[in-house]
Length: 95
Image 1 (tube, one colour):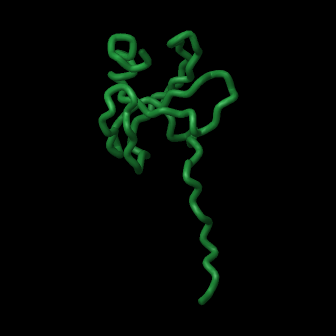
Image 2 (cartoon, one colour):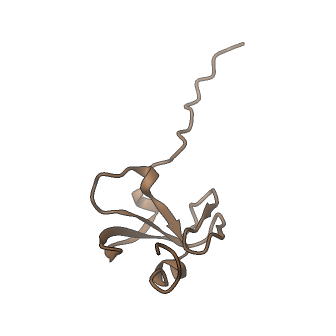
């Protein structure tokens, strides 16, 4: 059987800057967070929103949030519905 020359996909793909929307830094729970808006058009997988625990389907606009301390990696990124992220202080998440 011939060897396959295809590159194996990593479990986590790096964020592509060209496909990204705007990015801001926001405070929450005493920490600073990077918040990046995604249009969703380049999204190929589903995520679970930590705010409502519902699915974010591929192609759905949403935000990606991670700590701004520079210590974390891709495992620290969380995908939120935009409305859930905006309402994070009014729900039960993080309490």
